[in-house]
Amino acid sequence: MLSRKKPGPTARKRLVFMASCRVNNCKLKSQFMNNKPKTTFATLLGLALFVALFFTYCTKKQVSPAAQDDAAAKPALKTQATGFVHPGILNTKQTLDYVAQQANSNDANRLAAYQFVLNYCNNHSPSGAYKATVQVAGGVTTPDEIAFKGDALLSYALALRWAKTGTAAYATTVKQILDGWANSFQNFSVTGSQPNQASLEASWAAPTFAAAAEIIKYYIPASGVGGGWTTAENTQFVNFLNNMKDNYINNVPNFNNNWNVSAGYAKMAIGIFEDSQTVYQNGVTAVKTVLPNVIASDGSMNGEICGSHNDYVHYQYSLTGLSYAANIAGIQGDLSIYSASSSRLLTGFNYQYKLMHGTVSPPCSPNGNVNNPIWPGIEVANRHYGTTETSYIASNYVCDSNGLPNGDIGFLCWTNYTHNNVPTTF
Image (cartoon, rainbow, N blue to C red):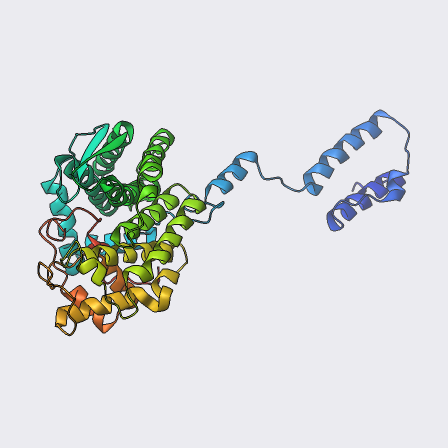
């Protein structure tokens, strides 16, 4: 039987070192390093084997550059520099997931609300009238306004449809609309007696366009395939939003009414899409500033109901714009608009409740029906407040067959689909 030869002194020290390397995280022993064996072929071969073993057993694994890039790319839905949640203009990934799952699971109430989205999509086509100059007028709705704001609404409705179905053709049409206006639009021209009308039209259209683009840019439907929003499209679309913001929205006169509410809401939406804290905060400031001016401490909104308006429509413009602004800020982690000025927004809805019950009367004789139509901001407000008053108003929300309040194309709609009975936990 062959006997195993004992290792010599140098070899024994090498084995001791290797065992120590594993235990002590490769801290070299000075007595070994100071031992200088004769340089022979066998010694060099042994040293080479030792070096290989040293790096095999003792070197920490490094993360590959590709793996580091993959890790850095994961938080794509939230911009780290600004902290904005995307999508974050009225809808979030969670709320879009929730309503899509309910509708796709044949929930009767959600499907009934979704039908209004379908109706608008089926009854309207992209205008194709992507003009450089959009003509607007105060007090009347021009064909250009119908094309411009109608396309904004259609792009948003189709974005909701795509989020539910994942059908790529809907995202493609949304991008065609957004690209068409972003590449063509240059300015507004104004006719009629209100020279500032373009500022209001931009304040209405911009956040609806932005809400549609945010869904296509950031949302991933159940199909797992995104909308394919490109860098070039994004650059041109940002220029489009900035044109409306810098040249029109920022120039809204200080009327202390729905104009200023809409301008603040629009800047908040644009700021989120553009990841601009400055633009967003300017919008928040504008909304909080006008809030106690448009809604009195007792909730009355007589400056919106009476005066030049004398109807039951314009005060709901303010309530809807304020509700949308509060919702946007809430998505970004700030609920302060809901509670600002002693919950003045809720006080305004309480006033609407009293108007509907005839327990208060404005100092004029407004045109129209106080009970109908109700504007879509109530679904957003009721989701947060859930009071007897807001629930009652929401129960009277009846839109037309296209999901709009009596055909009005000022604000994005379909909140009965996106917000009604959607949990506030996300």
